[in-house]
Image 1 (tube, each protein chain N blue to C red):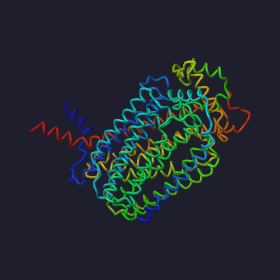
Image 2 (image 1 turned 60 degrees about the horizontal axis):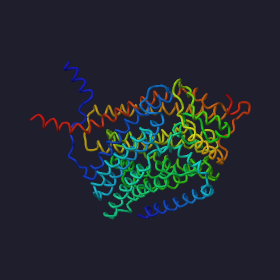
Image 3 (image 1 turned 90 degrees about the horizontal axis):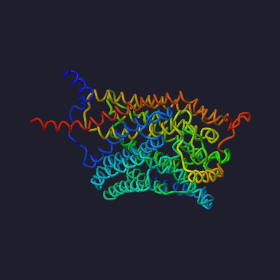
Image 4 (image 1 turned 90 degrees about the vertical axis):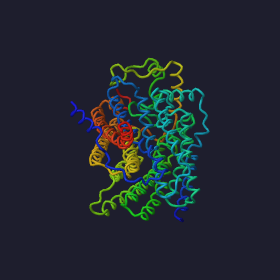
Length: 137
Length: 471
């Protein structure tokens, strides 16, 4: 009986602490206003299920590269071309990356540009050595 | 020819039960049967779908009825959906068992199943057609998420009304079940709306992805597990009750804050790295408690005691909890390690061990117990269930071992040495192929299990139909 009340009290207290911590950590983010294009881009990201193969902020599928910093490392024109005239994806011989039309591709990149500005606190980590840079082909 | 047919018939339809002992399940408990059966069916479907998907990942050119994205979305949603069904059924069943009272509304529990089943199938249908909400684990379209929420609320209401009507609210099992049942819709609610900022989106998403499993559903599952141990008479009721509250308290106090290990790199402040890793370390305590209890039950049980096979499912669950959630989860929660392992196949290995290994097996234990408790089972059935258990566990072990190797290679080559992602992924092919083999063993085991359970339940009905046909 007493244990049951103690348990309930523990739930309420920890739920409150947890909610408080969450509020505290997203407070600054909630105040940011994102351009409408970027929000439209997020809808395109969701509708096309990009997350099933790609990760964003490290969360998502494991089949394709993380896109958190893609706009910082690759030119916009190149990315638009990639999305509108998608190439065959290794290891496939025929299967192509899903295609978007130009407008959708631009909005999606607006979104990814905003994402690349998020301060991820030291992730992704820099490689151990500098002799083989991250984008080396 | 006829002999061959008979052999085939015997292979697929052996007599699974010898006789049904006089039914002691109350009508309320019978309402939990469909929930229990559905978990096995969805497990069978899940294994086949996932194995096909893992093959599609390595050979993208293979003709497939679904796109990889649809298949994966279905796989993820199934992985939450059937444990949810099983947990709801188990909660109904063991609440009745613990209180000796009927449910507030048996009809609500019965119709709730068909409602949730319809919702789940609709979600799978939409995902198969590529209509996705595009957030990992929460891909269901908006109106179907509302439908799931309503289903959860009805479930929580039914339990609450039962407890209040019978004035048993502060009984330990009941209080844990109730708090968990109320938590799940509460945690689900913030995740059904569109959020524009990915940081906020991910923070909310893990309320379901992490806290359903480690919080509300785990509470329900541990209650069910404890009640299971008591019903199997391998642990004293009083002892189980004490253990339950201990465990529940630890799960919750560390569980909420341990969600922090998902908040390291998504744009949230650094303090999550400290409290997330400490709380994740504490989470190992309930795991050890559970393992100790399981160990004691093996030591204490009387000689020539033949347990219900549900106990083996329970042991499997404890094993994967210690290995997957305990060991690997603890390792992954160390921020310096997680920095390299985040977003690699390590996550996938952990998810499979925690979600199926620990949680899935626990749900299967309860579902199996519910369906077989009142039946005396034939040796054929017992042998086949044991075989399927071996297959499920060895398949999962092979799968997870491959994923851990793949995750290690990814962390080292891609993150550590900075090699190109696609190059590294091509290097992983042998391990991913071996993972598919593990998946195939798993899927075969899951299919066998589903087949056995369906035949076990359908046989009496078929017998009824046949006897009415032949006077």
